[in-house]
Length: 445
Ligand code: FCB
Image (tube, rainbow, N blue to C red; front, side, top):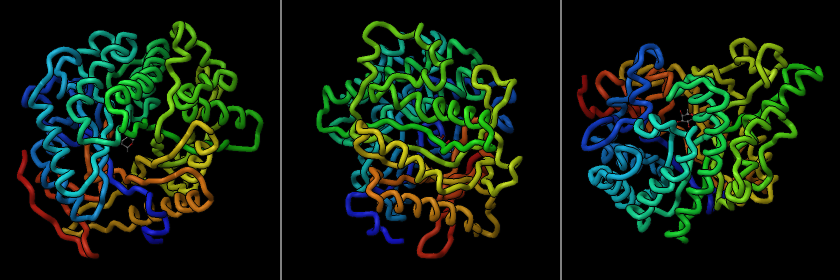
């Protein structure tokens, strides 16, 4: 496989996000986010890890961008922290936050690296959560204000924008399952958060285009190829419903197809949150969509799960090869998802905005045995190439992630980075020209 097999327009990049890498969680005027608060509570994050320092990207962004350059990667996807820009979520702008992102963007551009900005990667300002967060319809106005500030501040320098990162995960994990910040477990909050996020996808797009018509604007969706656990009719129905929930409920309303209520009637409950004019407002013609795929899910009928009547069977229970996240290594999934989304006329272009794997490869004697990650990425890229060769709409691939980082509820237990960090010393190890070497960056407590 060669770079050129993918064609000239194909974009290659690495991805990261603010909360997972920046640290400096209340420095230089930044307000707290829901994740800063969530991580203070006992036993929410594995080992009670905190994102307070993370990868110290706030202080080391120059070194990190230099590593991207050294690795020869031309595009860098990162997110802006809403509460670093607007500490209270609305109102007062924190100029030091604007300056920080200007520095990051400038460093990228000077290094020949194109910045791709995600506006929202899960770190809602805490002050907004106190008013109900994503479950409060006011978020439509809050979000518009935040996007306006970002666009006015950075528009001249940034062409590629993504509105939301994986809305299914932050609404489902944060407002229904309670495993992610803000830790709520409410069906009604989940459905209102879902609807507001769908509307914000469009509000974000419209707000950017209004003042920056040359911008290329997309948004990202999590997705997994879903297969039934058996040939039984019950499992088949369970799989179809799970697919509607996980893979269709955010993209289809934006394409003008509405929520997939016919397939998953439970979603009819969302109707009480839909106001006059919303169905029109939800529609967007994104310049591209980002799809983020890591695995497939095998689904079985389950009487005890309310509404869905379906459950995911974890990879270890199925005794299949899996990553440290217990995600099955199943490269065909990425091909299936590209194929699924390419079928929509409204989808113009697909970029794989995240794909990668966490394995147990520990740093020993300054060397890392990284065979599994390399094999994972290679076999996924083979599937992307297959899709590309068949004329499907995929035209880019970003690996998750540049450095190991704070993996949400998993804390620092997971290593997704193509650059490894030893968190005790923040020592980073990179691979270059077939040789591993480590560069000492900074001692940190
Ligand atoms: C995705 C998230 C990203 C990271 C990877 C492993 O769902 O968007 O922040 O946690 O998973």
